Image (tube, rainbow, N blue to C red; front, side, top):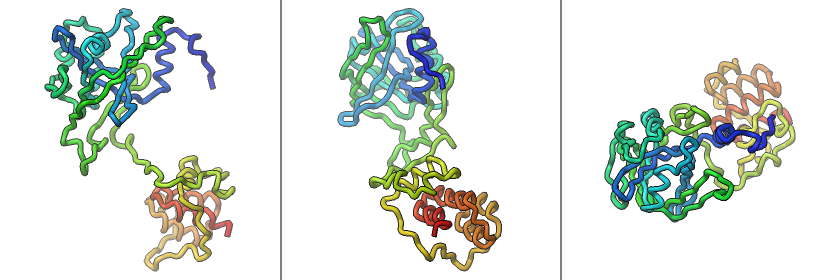
Length: 310
């Protein structure tokens, strides 16, 4: 593993190294309006949420490394105290990349990038019509970073005054990330897409789990179980008692190949096959336990993994 001191690198290298590890980052498409009415829109990947009561988000508009000037977004927000933030979908990615160019203040990035405006309700700047999720914001606090050392960082804490969310991205009254199809920023020229197999759910424990350290040693030190497997077992509320009658199968199960049943996702049939073929190696037992974990059945997985310890 490389150990790198930040100031052993040139600014651009240091910047990209930071962005490569702090990733993926959501992208804020920020719209501002100058005092004379000129509208600016620009993407920022130094962006996140930090409070919900009231809702506070933050962006980090840096001083341009090309021109050495403050970006219009920073100037406009400090002058007017207002902006909107629109999220960026996969379909918008090329357009927001174009909008990141450093056009002169009087040039409209909306027109250059082919984006459309939608009128806000509480603030002057419009938001981006192509986005399914937008926020109207006011400036809460401005935090310059290391100005005395010539640093280029700035933090703008923004209070969200109003949300605009497309009806089409809701499922059961919850925003569905599968419908949002958002783009996130990585390092260098890389992006990623929150779509398809990239999206998955991990249920938050509803209680304090027993922890991996409370699992029996044969499970805890297994060469076949992953950290994710152990964490699912460690999320159990209590360590189950060993069931001496385990396993009990319904009469309808007939199986003779562990591999075929596991490939089909049939954990109980795989367990039936391993017992009736007398194949109870630690590796096979672990694979079956993992299949039960994939089905979020940690207690049955535990009974399986302890079969050779009864």
